[in-house]
Image 1: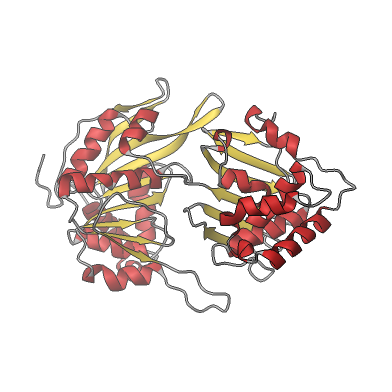
Image 2 (image 1 turned 180 degrees about the vertical axis):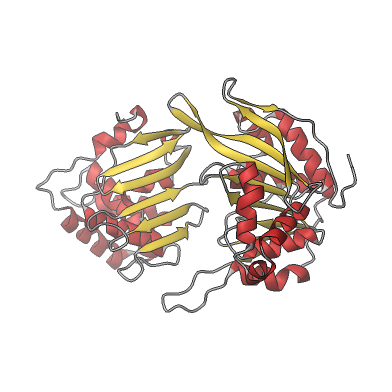
Length: 423
C-alpha cells in the first residue's frame, strides 16, 4: 500500500539523525521548564507555544527535533496531529491504528491509509500509550495489559501490551469522534435516505422503540445520537430523556437529559459500577419519557427491555449481522444473560423482544471502490406473530447491491404496543 499524499509531510519529517541524542535534548528542555515554569508541565496543551520556544533555545535545536520533543511532552507523541488536528489535512480522521511502533494506519473518508508516522522504538510507543491511558484515569501495566478507555473528547482507546499481545508488539487503536452529525448531514452524505428519514420521523412521533444494529464501527451510535434531536421537535424540550452508558459517549441535542454511567473496577478490584445494577435499581424510579441504552452488551438489556414493555420508549444499539438477526437471536440471547432472563427461558425472551421492540435499523460499511462508507442497509418492523411467541420481523427497506442504495421493499404499517394502528 502506498503512502497517501495527504501525509507526505509527516513522512518527510520523521527521519532523525541517528547520532543525535534525542533523550538528552528532551532532558535538557524538561529541566529548564521545571525550573522556570513548572505549571507548563501540569497543563502542557495550554503552554504549547512556551514549550516550543524553550526547546528552540537549545543550541543544537532543529525544527523537526523541537516538534518531536514538544509533541511527546503534550502527551500524544507522533500521534498529536491526528488527535488534535493543526491543519486541514488531518481533519476528518476517524481512526488511528498503531499496529507496531513503526507502522501506523489511519482511516479517513472511508479509506484506510498507511502513514509515514512512526515511533522511535517499542519503548517510545509504550511511554506514549501509558501517557494517553493515564489521561483517561486508567493505567497500563503487566497486571493490566489491556485497557479500554475514553479520551476527554469521547474518542475510544484500546491499548494492549505484553502479555496480552506478543512481546515487542504493543498496539493501540483510537476511534475518534470529532463531532456527531445531524440527521440532515447524514442524509446529505448518503448514510441515510430521505425515504428512511421520513419513516424515522414517523417512528419517533408515534413513540416507537428503535434498535440500531450493526457491526463495530458501522455508525450505530452516530445515527442514534442524531435521532435524539427529534425528541425536542415532536415531544418538546421538557420530555425526560435518561441515558445509560458504560462511558460518557452520547451527546444528545436535548435539554432535559439525565445520565447514569457505569464504572470499571479499580486496580484493586473495588469501585466497579455495573450498568446492569444501575438499570435494575434506577429505571423504575427515574420516570423517563424516553430511555437510551448506549449499547446492549449484557444483563442490562433485560431491565431496559422490561421498561420498554411497561411503556417507556427507548433507543439502543446492538452488534448483529442483520436486523432479523438482532430481533430473533441477538437480543433474546442478551436478555438471558440476566438471572431473571435465564429463569424465564428463551421463549419468554423472544416474547419480550416482540412486545418491546418496534423498529430495527441495521447499518454496515459498504464498499465503494477503494472506500468503505457507512450506510443504513436494512430496516425492519418487529410485529407480533399470529402463532407462537417468536417475533414476526417484516423487512421494510433493503440495500440493493446493484443500485448501491437503500430501497423500500414493503409498505409500512405503524403499530402501537397494544397492536392498534396509530398511523
